[in-house]
Length: 329
Image 1 (tube, rainbow, N blue to C red):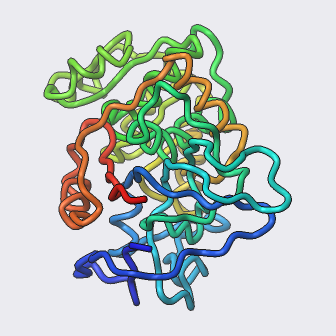
Image 2: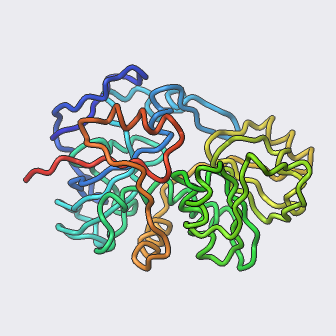
């Protein structure tokens, strides 16, 4: 099969397509022939200096065992495709089903390939009316948003929720999901993204160029989802209700940082997505109902992964960057 195989993590990697063996599947796994992939900021960071938080401390991914001792490495976690084989214990899917999901995150997803071995619990059925490209996008980013709004905090009708980077990968799902859950959604963004934020369902759009957090009337927020990582927690302080959480999504917080914020009366924490069967199944329903859509920023061919990484690295994409897999028998 065709795959992007790396001997080591290296920012200068050409991300070239090569040939490797089709993976075997375990009893609880299915084999998926991929039709589309999605990439995320973490894909790019993995080649650079990827860190995760473990027990409140920042640790390089290799040191934490994510890719330690793994060779060769196949990057990626987000897939959509067709099931071509099922493990002996799998009852959720059958051969021929169209599926999508985030595979083994955090861990070695091995998604940049024509075939991916994935635990059945990491996938959901793709709604028929949703394209493979749109489904592939609604994986890591969408699960991140959903877990923040449903698991880490439970959104209630009327909650006032602010999302930064509301037109990015995580943010554009967060706006739609929060609105679906009955929240009053405030989007904080750049002028170039204001129209899209409103189109996605934001009740109020604030622009960095005109919003002065230090002097503006307090927003009385129940939750902040900081998907942009532009400002430290004190910047939001006067706009948060007492005890209201502030979730940082693009970067980690050390124990020392969390302690410092707690001493300032701020409930700030870093939230990292993890595999969650209930979340991907819920997202499949939201896609089916039209409650959320995937905004596609661009589609790249599998052989042009380097260009896709460059587009992701700019940090200005509206929605998701998608990889189209080669069509073959």
